[in-house]
Image (cartoon, rainbow, N blue to C red; front, side, top):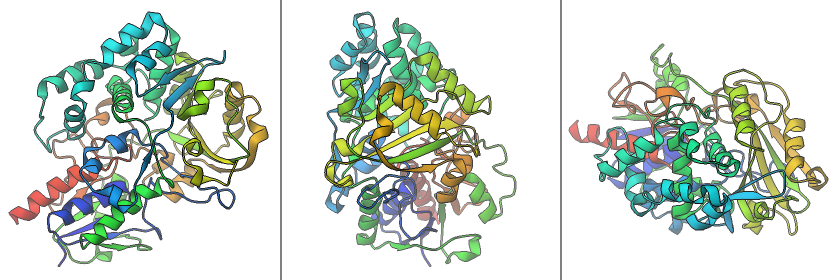
Length: 469
């Protein structure tokens, strides 16, 4: 009998399996697709030679993840590549605010009226970042805080809405960039703890950057899988699990799935009936005949580029998708351009490019025209560079990854208490009604992102039980 069976070979499932195998437990992973990856995959979606990331593409939380940093993933081919600028936020006048590794450079891009306020916001936390990120991403009770004082100070700054936090800024440049950071998790700007979301992304960029993985996000999943196999773990692909009887006998079962799927497979009925899914996204992957013609020079060297004219426009777009059940006329866009730092992703002289905007859950429309009109405001002539595009709205995203219910790439709304207490209001979020069944997906703390910490935290709960039995 196996010690643990993991269902789902996304970054969290693979990390959970690795953590258990490292401690001597026998582990097998079962994945419905023919390859591992979940939200960290790389595929030729448009033309031969153009390698795209269907979901996550840039990884500020990955390079900062305490779980990943404790694993020898570089020995298995994972290499982080850093663009000249982690992130840029251009404006219609051709200027841009930037999120740089340097706090001083970032602050200077906001202008003299907000430079000091930004430095006062982030500088107290940076010297203690490694401890803070470990404490923050291990909540609620998988580990005692190493620095509870700093964690409490962070909570005081981050638990209010991001609009409260950005009220310290006087000009739009800092407000817009920070609003965009919150938009990465599709959270309304006025929501509880959204200040913490923006602050974590900013600190992550200053601490270690906002890199891409050489060769694409698949490299992260492949490194985890290769390490797991060296530890003696098994991986079975092309194996869809519809009920517990489909799995071999084991002392524990760990699900890197949505709560909805887990309830169906395990027969938990309406146990997760109150769990809420958030807005979806509409994503376009592009094969380009050269770089994006950004008007702002800073955007040409940034790995990630946020698109929103100001914080009001960003807030309006987020509200439209998450609360008003409509696609925004001017969507807030997150874009990633891996080819500026990784020439292996496209043929010589060409580039891959990725953009998505927020839309209502399950939306079946086509956002391509609105998305490209928005891009043209900041990169005139963009459409002339397009060789091919691959579009995916909520139905297509959900079909490719069952965790993306309604196109929600975060596997659950990041709003209200569900930001911190997910998938249930519980101090044991990785447990379920059955003592041998656990959940480790992005529906558990610390939530969305390719960082493996949900899997790491869940593995702790599993091995504690295994050692007691």
